Length: 359
Image (tube, rainbow, N blue to C red; front, top):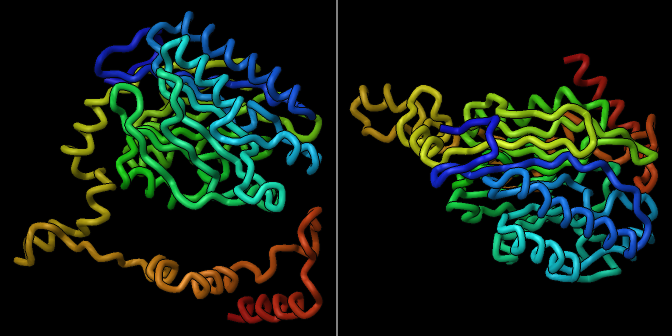
């Protein structure tokens, strides 16, 4: 049984800690390494207090902060593996725990010609990088990271299957389903989320846990970095969508829970009415079987837009623009680094808006 409130773990449970690290404001590589040392000390200290801890998760931007200066972003971008991951690996090995660490950013293969990636690493208790994930959906229009391209599933502590996503990734149901259908039992969501979106972000992680029969570990930042105020509320959520433990807004808060391996596997194998992962690809199996058409239900995807996205991405993009807008810039609220829409595009948008209103 998954549970909350103790400091232990068992052969059947993975002890997961989310650490609510205050958002740092850093400027140089030396600043970054000084901060990384603090994180390494936290890994070792927290393991002392939580002897059952198998995995510790830190927020997005916790290692490097947000480099609001573009040149500082490029100057501090790191390689993976590299000196920072070596430090984290040594801390994990010494403490005998797994860890998830944020690197913002990771140098692009064409560095410095192209923007870095926003990257997470999962490091095992031997100090080895076992998963590297690059943020697929950067928080545009503000974040300028080069987007990543895929999710991963890795055998984590005690064999629990682990995926990682980052912050704004979690606002897209598709990424959760992709991880779950690949086998993820725990989806880790480090984030550097700020007000005013607190209520929505607390809600979405719980909803996605329920919809995908998956454990969720959210590590969010706290504090104020001179630009944004981060709302915390780091949490560990059960596969039924109910919260096992949640921080408030405090700096250096932690939540810790034991996540049962057998419980989630039993639920996925034996639950029926709310087994979303099974029912999605066995649609209407009760009626299909009664009709004499086999015992597998309907496997084909019924969603037209998703079919289009796979077979004709540009057409899918155009469909999205039809119900939103055609340009990345918005004339009424300019954002630095984003081109404003030109007059012709504005006229087309106005015409489309009028047509939709008339309809």
